[in-house]
Length: 113
Length: 115
Image 1 (tube, rainbow over the protein chains, first blue to last red):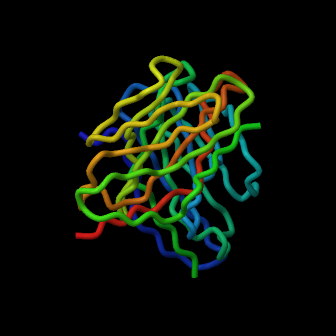
Image 2 (tube, each protein chain N blue to C red; image 1 turned 45 degrees about the horizontal axis):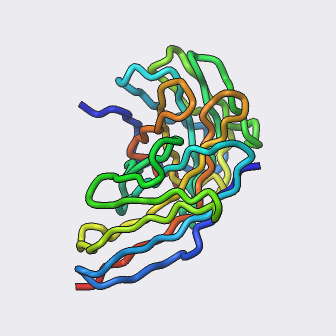
């Protein structure tokens, strides 16, 4: 059973479109995250939710909107896609408290043309 | 503020020789530190973690890391490299601000293992 799963694995779309990436974890964790990995492999946190509540919101364009319908799911919706949004997006989860490691999904490679 | 510096963007070793991947961190708190590995086109897998217990931490696949507070370092080592170790390695420091687990990633070190 996959612990943290993401769909789709690959997403190719045109500029200006709206797309969503879904993430689910079956680990019973309270906290979920979205990261963006750029072409140079640098990973940066975008958002974090704890029990469906937004707790971390980095400097991300408001075209990106996370949604957590329940604590096992954290979806990422992106409006008006731009070329610079092309990246690999990783979902992760962890259990409170603070020092628990994060478990990562396989990633979604988004290509905007 | 928290940050992580991985001193080498690329490291190349021969199979069977030791591996050293260097990481320095800065943290306002007592940090938790992690090493993750990312194989090509895969997600990230935890290798090991330091959370204020023993300073020498053993992880999976024969890797270990030593937390040195005086040097603010958390270097990753392995006595003998295997071809399957070729991957990207990330050093991570955890930020305890806001009482939630915020990770700061280093820029990564690509390990190449030559036969």
